[in-house]
Amino acid sequence: MSVRENIASNLLTVIGNISSPITIKKATRQPFPLDELSEQQYPAVLVQTQLETKEDQELGGGARTRINTLEFLITGYTKGAESNIDTARNELAEALENKLEEDITRGGNALDTEVIEIETDAGQLFPYGAISMVVRVIYEHQSGTA
Image (tube, rainbow, N blue to C red; front, side, top):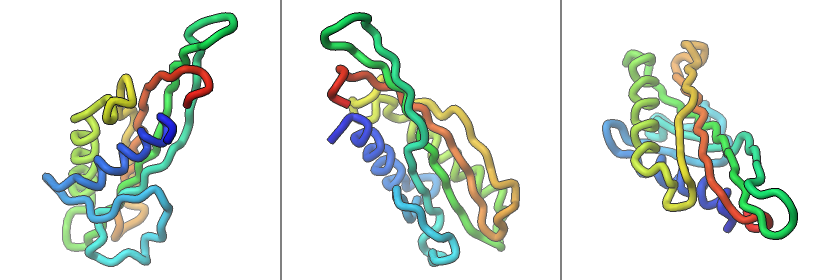
């Protein structure tokens, strides 16, 4: 697998293993319709590669080290007409951010991992609640080996 794919797989595995303070019930890289999930499948999280930029570290010919900035869009969904949906969104965002910060190297594949943005649906999806989190991962590789 490529470094890029290793990082994406690591993010999915780490998120899928969150069990405290909330338990992630569904973690996937495949989009899904919200209304087809059962109550037992919330909170659910979608991990998708969003953007990648590359920068060569050496000039001229020969092997080049590239520094890559890879951004993932992590979308989390929660549901609950009986609970405060804003609290549920905040708990989901906090659980995701804390877990992602435990290993910023993504299993030794990255130089750094940062949560750079969190946005909510602001009640637009009620009785569902959603958060969108942009996660930036910086990694390096030799040209031709990504």
